[in-house]
Length: 420
Image 1 (cartoon, helix red, strand yellow):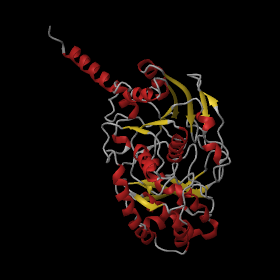
Image 2: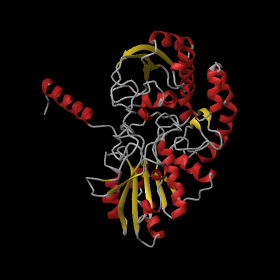
Image 3: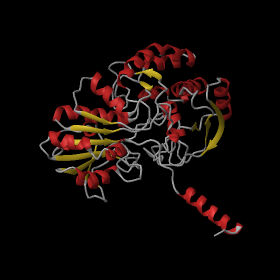
Image 4: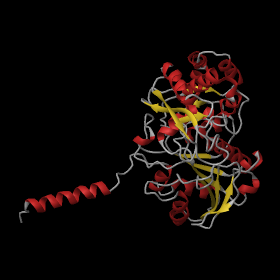
């Protein structure tokens, strides 16, 4: 039967609409997808080591989903329990921002997962001891699955929490299965000052640069080896990921890993402008393009943008802006008129984000002096001598040149732990 032109057009449109409505399969398959592809073989091995019984805990948040959008919690609670005799998911764990990644507070209580009824053990308490898993939190657990999204930056606390789990694994005989995910700002660029020995703390888990260019699975392997932790760690590698990939090239859906990182562009800037977080400069908020904008009532936006643009920082330029920050009282200058700059990323492959952060700190100090609480920058910088050089007016490019030898030594160490 021969179709009329009108019928043929209708048929073509129907096919096109179907293609548009059908999401393309992601090129990258993350750890949870690979675990399913392999029919939970690694969990069967862990269960065998525990006499055929495996009581499982899961460290997760909203980004912990498979390629079809199912929660890792539900995949393991339903599919893995059916496939692995003796396996039972018994407990959930959460870190900073909570299991829903919706809270930007200093203390999060334990809770219950509504969908599964499983208890949620919060590891973001009000004091340091409450942020480490110990015997009480791990009671009744044989192994923990970790499925978190690193953002490619040293001061992301999920790195620290992963290291704490490694230490708890070694101390309490609990195995770890880490489901790897992409570094969203690529796994090639290695940038910024390397943490000095002895400076490790909650936002500085290891001797690494601000931008280490590694996945969480690679970092966990490094932590375990270099600190001689001795944890029983299994990393489920991704397939399809290339080190040059940015997150928006993977085919994966972006899910906010925290309330204030709502796009790959914000994650890119976070590797530098987050140095201003905790100072008296507004750099994030619930309705702001966090880490791509910063301001304060005492800033002249035009002057600051002019100064930074004259610095000719590769990959970015700056636009003066006036805005009123939103949020609650712990965000600086909420409800006040502030001036500042918008960071426009022109070429993310050329951008040295840690250098951008040092340039921003230097500019604010040079233009506004003691109005800017510069000493608070060391909370994330963790290098007092470098901060003193900024305060002395040294050129940021010269400061960046000085961190290159340590960065090169880190790159040599890093090469031993790359999985892709």
